[in-house]
Image (cartoon, rainbow, N blue to C red):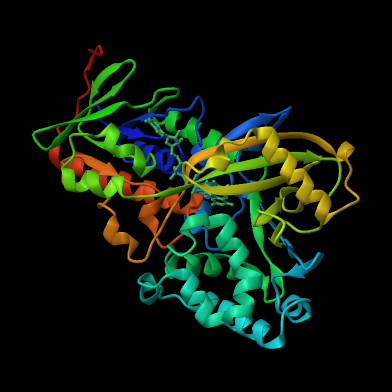
Length: 445
Ligand SMILES: Cc1cc2nc3c(=O)[nH]c(=O)nc-3n(C[C@H](O)[C@H](O)[C@H](O)COP(=O)(O)OP(=O)(O)OC[C@H]3O[C@@H](n4cnc5c(N)ncnc54)[C@H](O)[C@@H]3O)c2cc1C
């Protein structure tokens, strides 16, 4: 009988880990709290349209993602697009994202444009992020681009996306975002972003089928309550259905869940998990009869708008009616998160009509609000020092989330790569330490 391992969380990281385990001859049992796979990439039925819960696009550097598409026979479903970026500033829509747009941008001095452009160029070319790891991002940016460009171009993003953590993020984390987008281009003047036909659903469904075909077991609506540790070895997993013994466990759930799920871990490790902070997101998803703008990504710098940008997804993936996302990031527990879905919709509608007054009430066909509590770890300078390692000092136990690929921002490709890496470590561990055949179940106490 094959060796067996538990994977907790069926987002991209957990699914990739389960898939790799199955490829490596280990039977994965994948526990997912939600009623569907995908995590942040999960899909929902938007009045007949299967759509990603949150917008997803891909860049040229997403190589682990492309490798997986190839393996799953989905490479032909991936489409590249020459997307456009825009800026709402000074009461007008302006093109953005290339040197000509920067030069023509209305509302910035030539010196500010030059400093901003130089900084973006250098950091697109730069590969060594380590010197930036110890620096705080807002101070780093102000020093490079100057006060004027900071105020107009960066401050709104920091204020509305990072909130009270605006002066807490590391410069390496911001660098990774500039680097990823800056490199994803056909040439200096044309941006290049991509999507999968059918959205993330195409990938998660194929991955799910592959895991099952290879003998894996996917258990939806099965939140793990506890991971038991005995004699410094991982021992069992407890869910509402009972207690099941495993020789290896990989958790891919957001790290703040770990102290409650693994109370037997050493106190110094639990302390580190407890110290981690996150941003939550409430993301308005809309169907519109017509386009708001020609831009896929629209940055917003407007003192009367508390939103850093709109993502007009139809300008990447030509879905009709028009699909638009408005992500509101807020520190966990922030009072605005208690606002109703209708309130988030109302204020987004007002922003859209401010930007394009020709849009009428009739143009809004439908809307939803998608929420995620642990949507973005707060990645501070020297962030790796605040994280326990992915392989814990407990035999057979691995714990990771999107924080572990710092300085890279959360991304499906990065989660897939890390999930597969963890799975290979697990398979090696099981091959060395466990005779094939394991897995007894007993009812929950
Ligand atoms: C608004 C937004 C936009 C984004 N846009 C992009 C983009 O354009 N491109 C891109 O590449 N990435 C994007 N991302 C990021 C991408 O979605 C994430 O990096 C990726 O999904 C992380 O995958 P993960 O598996 O590491 O974590 P998650 O997706 O968070 O998965 C964790 C899973 O664990 C499950 N879980 C939690 N507790 C338990 C429990 N007790 N038992 C069992 N299961 C549990 C959760 O239900 C979840 O399914 C975006 C994210 C957001 C929020």
